[in-house]
Each structure stands twice: as structure tokens, then as C-alpha cells.
Image 1 (cartoon, rainbow, N blue to C red):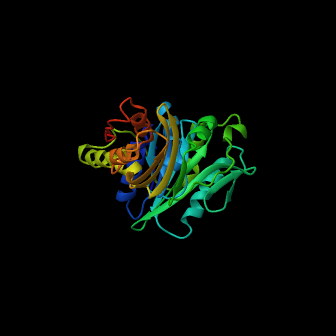
Image 2 (cartoon, rainbow, N blue to C red; image 1 turned 45 degrees about the vertical axis):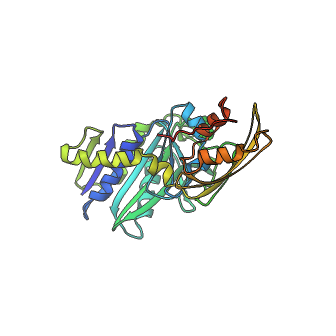
Image 3 (spheres, one colour; image 1 turned 90 degrees about the vertical axis):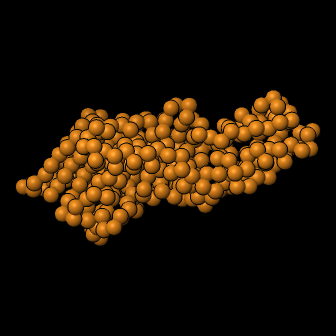
Length: 322
């Protein structure tokens, strides 16, 4: 049985929760295609460090969201000029290759000649238009990825360029590649065109299929509770930040009272150790700062705000990030 699910939601927490729901509830005879879009979102790989992969300050300023997915691979930017696809099926050695053929054939039907390159990229004229990632749960394969149609590449570059803080992480780094929108190759192409093409190439002629639109109100109450729990997981700080690999961070900044260098060790999103050097007159200041930030959630803006406070040289207080 071939099933196609089309998401009407642009909420990344719902879309990833629904994807996980499909993986966990897929039947052995089902072939599933799930098409979805997120708005203004950075999605990082399972083993990545959000502080290293994303300019979190810029993302926050532009009211973007960050979410960690279940698969490995690198960080990507999603907006409504980008179409995400997920293939869910019983695992087989050839299945990813077959899924890629569906995408390439769908692109060909819109006049775009694409090729699969390396382990996870789809290229057109040497430029990346799609990244792919995979994971297997039980014997169910989840193969998902992006298609850049008319995405805001300026935002993509601003969000996926980290700040100047010096950070050394044990996590997996993204591999930067030159990306291009499909709209530059075919000015007439639309998201709706690709949805239609992908659906047509996915379901073989003569095969039974079911097509359903989904959103937060899609399922009956019993299943909705399951989805809501999965959504809360994808929304949580523990999943998106606390699941980060251990990393070392050097922050250097000048304040009205002097210059400070913080050397932090962060594990599971918490500051587990810190060394501080400063030219401030208060010789006890490094001890005060260390006591204030140790075992707290790492948040750059909170630390800067703390050090900018008028009472920093005499009485430091630190509030854990909610």
C-alpha cells in the first residue's frame, strides 16, 4: 500500500513529531511519502552542536526556531521556499537509491537534470539543491531531505554561519557546499509543482494509494495524545540543546569594568567547569563569576547580561534559563 501525507502545518515540532509517529507506526507492507514545510527554522543533525552550527543570536533576533532531528548529517535551513520529503518503508539495501530515483525523476519532469553525488547530496550543474539523511528504527527506514525551490539564501547563510566565539566541539560538523535554488534553473517551478511530481513518481501506475492532508488537528484523540507527547520532546531544551556533545568554548569580551576571558567546558548543555581571566581590579571576580555560572545552562546572552550588570564586581546572581 502506498500512502502520501501532505502537511498543512509549518510548525517544525509538529512536522518532526508526525514523521517520528509515522516511523513508529508504519506497517510492514506500507510505502510512505510525507511532504512538509517548516517556516524560518534551522534543523540540526542528531549529533551536532547547535552553538557551533547556528548563529543562535541572529536566529533569535529574527524569531526563528531551532530543532534537532533524529537522523545524522549536517544543519539545514527551512522556509516556505523549501520542500521537505520523507520516505518511510521497510529497510532494504537498495531502498535509498530507489527513493533518490523518485526525486531525480520528479525533477526531470520539471525540466531539471539532477544527479546524486557523494553520500547525501543531489546536485544540478554542480550546485547542491538537496541534502539527504537516513536512519533505521527497528526494520523501518526513514530517508528524508530538503529541496531548495525558492529559499531565502541570505537567511540561510546568516543563520548557518556561527558567531566569532572560539568553540571546539566533539560533535559532527556540517559540510558546507555551494547551494542553489531550483527557481534559478527553472523560473516557472513552484512548490506545488514538485508536490505533484513527487507524488506522481512515488506511486507506481496501477498501485493503490491513499493521499491525506495532515496538521495538528489531524488525528483522533488517542493518537493526538501520542503526537502531543512527541511534539513536547522536539520542543524541549533538553532535546535541542541538552543533547549536545561536550564542547570547549572561549568567550572574550570587554566591559566597562575591564576585559574578561571565559574558558568554559559545556556538557549536555550545562557549564561543568570554567576558568576566568580578567584585568578587573577585583581580584575575587573570577571566583565570583565561576561560582555564578557553574552547573547552569549555557546561554551566551545570559552570561553577557550578567557581566554587564552594575553589581557585577560586588554581587553576582545568575538565573537559570527556562
